Image 1 (cartoon, helix red, strand yellow):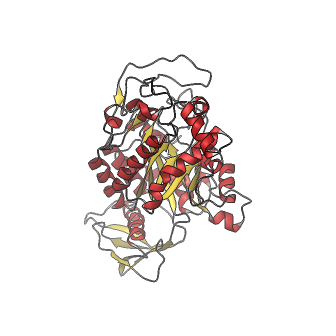
Image 2 (cartoon, one colour):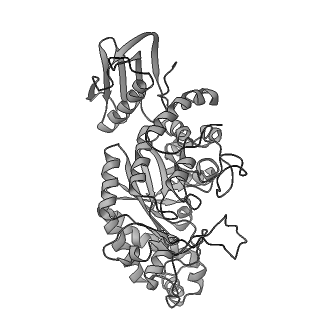
Image 3 (cartoon, one colour):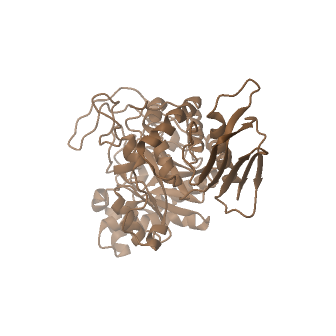
Length: 474
């Protein structure tokens, strides 16, 4: 469509370029929820009689309003404040139900106001899930009234490592700066409400039983060797300090989850499950006894048992468990939603095991990877995912049967913040790669990359207007 830059592009669009209609940006369009459209469908019709937006639900109507707003703001207003838009018919609906961004606020805390801006960015791109990574070894970010030390102690680390971490590294340089922060329950409820007003679900993640060093630093009795007082982890990478498998620790997690469920109405709750070393379970006497009592052959199997015990809280509340793809190997609940992160092949394994799956493979949608030459780009974790690679991403791997493909419910990008100390850097790494992912998540017709860039260039002004940083196009 000439001079009009809708991102993501509608799946069906008919335009009469010879006929332009005068429209009022202040909102003269008729807006209706109708019964003859599906819950995710919307229509936009601009005719000489005016503009009409219809949809099958309030959420779909929000998407219609976003698209219509992009039609209006693509043209400079006349002196009377009105703009001219083409006579157009748009019939649109998303291909995938889960269109998300994972924001890690555990490695580097991000202020509430910035999280709200991220939600504005998601709404602009018709994305509908904020996966909120709230806990990790390096910080605990959610207020839990039953355990105040989680934020009094676990939300703060004395300093952070400097430079990129390597697998072989044993000595580190630190910045000498205390880092931390957390969200009160009031903060989180405001975030949830702000998201809901924009048709976005906030899915909280409490990562367990690994990635829990911040919690163990606050409450040493949660660890396998409580006589050794830990601090909140100051390095990146994976900690061997994981939760013990005692009854008291199971009850601790259940209590935490009950408070989390009270804050977040999301039908989904993410319990992590990734990168959980079992070395301490091999060594700790109580873990070995638990393994023997359960008749488990390997200590690694304790992870599946532990997750099942704490997930009872989700089942009782009618919520769905979400976990990283390692969960497939731990005899997780059959109705667990799996996030395939290690590769697209892990997504294939998950759907073949019968799990609904969100595709988020590191080789395609990890937005902590470099976008350009590491010699000139800000420090990142490594690897290379330029904008064009995101645009070319195929959400559904080739070779799946129709039934298997139907289990892929969507996709998301992951923004891990080890090397993103502030909101400026998060914006730089997220955008405009998110604009490309939005096309794939929505199911926009895939055309040439050059055509996408033609639409993207004016779209960047909308991102700028939200006050969020982005990487300039090459």
